[in-house]
Every structure is written in structure tokens, then in C-alpha cells.
Image 1 (cartoon, rainbow, N blue to C red):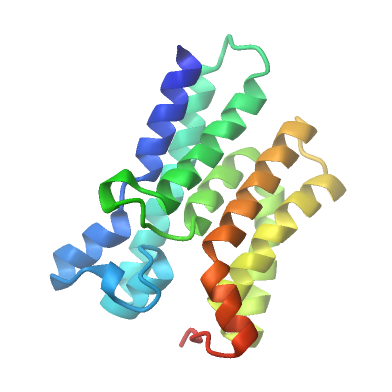
Image 2 (image 1 turned 45 degrees about the vertical axis):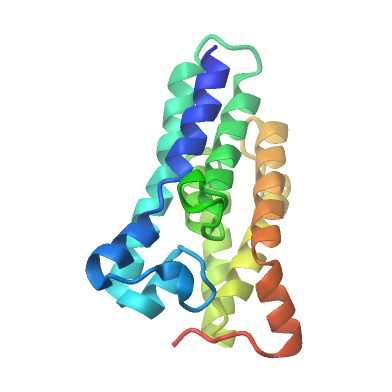
Amino acid sequence: MSILISILVSYLLGSIPFGYLIVTVTTGNDIRETGSGGTGATNVSRRAGKSAGILTLVLDALKGAFAILMAERLMLDVDHAAWWIGLAGVTAMIGHIFPCWLKFRGGKGVATGVGVFLMIAPYAILLSGLIFIIAVWTTRYVSLGSILAALSIPVIVLIWPERPLWSTFATALAGALLIIYAHRGNIGRLVSGTESKFR
């Protein structure tokens, strides 16, 4: 029962559409009708300003962190707890990308993933954050930085192991694949040269 509760609560946590709510309250507009249509920090910044974007980033990251903290509490006596805790983190990311409150149309899962991996692979998220900063600084493409950072996390976990290794690696790989899937439209625009740059 604790596993089921953990997965359900993680999804509901992840699906809280902070970006949508912030833009709606501050501008009266629907963030899904702007830019990429996503509810994440980058699109919020374009619509409601950088302060709103930063607030969205922080709140979305907290969703992922709280999902892990909650799962750790619930899984104290569960066999193979690390795997279930990792699944809770991935489920929070799924909730962010496919929120039930917004007809399963949300953000890209990056900030929520940051919160998840800060809890289970802090060294990997710090190094991937450096990759993100370098990529965005040199190209001005947030999407490219996000994709490269996401891909780097499972690689970093293997090179610089964090315990337990294989559950952490599986969570990182699943999270990276989710983020890449959520960025499929961005990947097409990057290839065609029509992706918007961050200013």
C-alpha cells in the first residue's frame, strides 16, 4: 500500500501546474497559448518575466524534491526501497509533463528532474548543471542545454557512482528519456534552425 500511495502522491505533486498558475494570476493569460505552450520556467519567463520564471523553476524543483522525501518516509520498511523511491521521482516528472489538471499538457520535466536528482544524485546534478550553463551560454538554446544536461546525468552516475548505483542509474536514464521525449518538438526545431534563443 505504501508503494501505491507513494506513486500516486508523487504524480499528483508533479502535476501541480505552478507555471500555469503563476502566469494566470499575474497576467490573466494562458501560458499554453504562448511560445512553446509549455508550463515550465523558460516559457513562463517569456510571458511573465524572469522573476516569474525563477519562481516557477524553484517551485517545480521542489515538487521533485518533496516527492523523493515523501517516498523515503513511506518506503522505510519496503524491500528494494531505492528502486521504488527512484520510481516515485520519475512519476513526479511524468506528472509535470502530463498533468491531469491541464489535459495532460504540461512542461518539459527539467526543473522537477533537478529536484529529484538533487536528492538522489547531488554530484551528478551539479556537474550536469555546469554542462547546462555552458551549453546555454554558448548557444543561447535552453532546450539544447536541457537535453545535454539530462543525457549527462546517467553517464555521470556511471563514471562517478552514487549509492545505490543501479537504481540511481535506472532513475537517471528514465528521467533523461522522459526529458528527451518532452523536447521532441524542440529537437526538430534545433535541426531545422527555427528554435527560439533565450535572451
